[in-house]
Length: 302
Image (tube, rainbow, N blue to C red):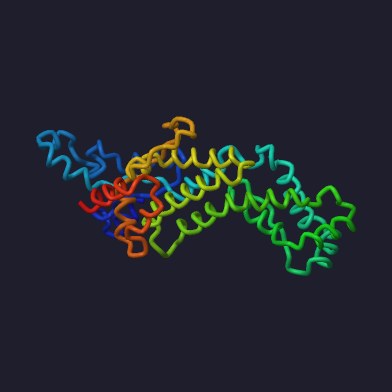
């Protein structure tokens, strides 16, 4: 990284380095950009050279040093994966059934031929990947998108009646998909390669919080899952919520500081405001009073 920065003459231009939340990545960045060590500017520097600096001079030098920020898309992955879906009693058996069905389509040539005869060629059910939560989302989407009667017929012909998805289970899957869909959309939006993504983080956080909170009163069977996801958002992004002046819901457990991730609040807020796509439109999803959102807007612009 030092070589890349030097080769492109970016020494004075790098302000943040975004990595995942692995401990080795955080350690590497602290070694590379440790603001308390003069050697991060000049490896041959004599530390005593800095002793005569007054506070303002010292701050002007070290304020420009880069800082590490957590990858937002990776942080969303952590929020979704906490208290894994398979651990939910209300839908655990249904998820196991879906996983077995996907493996059957992939591994059994005999069932595959029956499956395609009923549902047509080109149909597939993706298997899940332990390191990507949205693989489960895509699997459930694929199953719900199939013709249920034709799928049941294929399973009956193959003597696999135990894998038939019932009407109640289909509704459970639809409800679960509606919970996961906002996270899937947010993940796709914030992991783009060729467009700015930092500006959409605050709008995404507010939209997710508003959507999950509204679902709490609608999908009571999934209240535990919804509360876990909200708790994960508030814990891991607590600095951003504090900067936005959003109070933690009394229905959620106390803040777990151990799960808090490193995000620069000012960069998040300013990026959203300076992006013409968003401006201050995201304030419409702010859950506090009109007066408080007005004060927040004044603080950002002031």
